[in-house]
Length: 360
Image (cartoon, rainbow, N blue to C red):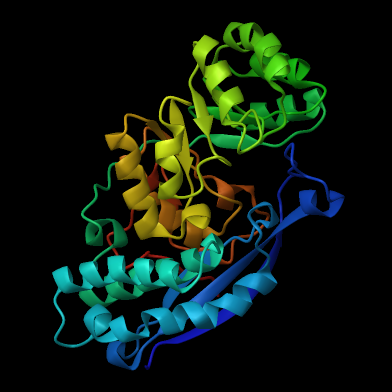
């Protein structure tokens, strides 16, 4: 095996404090921790690929667990190196090998979506560079993607409103709820913003509370409700969806493609994230399967750099709603190359691979 993988932990401050209903550590509101990997191979001389995984302890991952399992994951895909980037391989064979690589990682160890995500993104970046193709083209997907919304964390209603006013050029805002001032926050945002509002409670509501809030959410022009209840509270999710004119979107309940069947008839939509499901390839397949099952599709992100967001944007044409603003929440992004248009759509690069590079 000549595949080589190195990693680097990045700790980056947020532009504004960022808190969600599940936040328990006050230090978490000030910044993020993410793992950037670099991948190269003797068979693809001179090419260096990037990947990113965002460890979320809610899903049982930290930077330490990622670092521990990455060598195992790399060993799991080692036998595919020749088919991925070898001099005689063809693009269709490389595409098939990328699918096999994801399956090999899953067979090697369960869970660990962020670690798998980092390596999967890097493999797609390397193969894209090897064949001179951007990742979305490698996946056979369109570069025409929906605009992203902008997310604002839980804070005092006046503070949330001030941030909403600053982000008023976005076509939709995603407002984190699940605190004691949810309605006051919505009223404050609606006073300064006329566009669609998407709310995300991050498992912070109860069924009775959700039922009480529902008429007010409709009155304030909310577009969708994301994960109001705990991940396995499927009966509660179904009960609220049954009486809600707004779509309920599963996030913490929809981790991988294997969760989709259990959500049929429970919620209207699912939020797919690369760091949950294991990377760009698994995300594309999960989005496609969700559409087959009749779900409305939401493509989300963690608070990632442009590496993770560029990989997510590569599959965004499969989503109805897009929430790819993680790098916009950071005080400094160590990567360049990903551009947001005036219409708030990510401009997918025509450069090979992800089309991003380290800032000097």
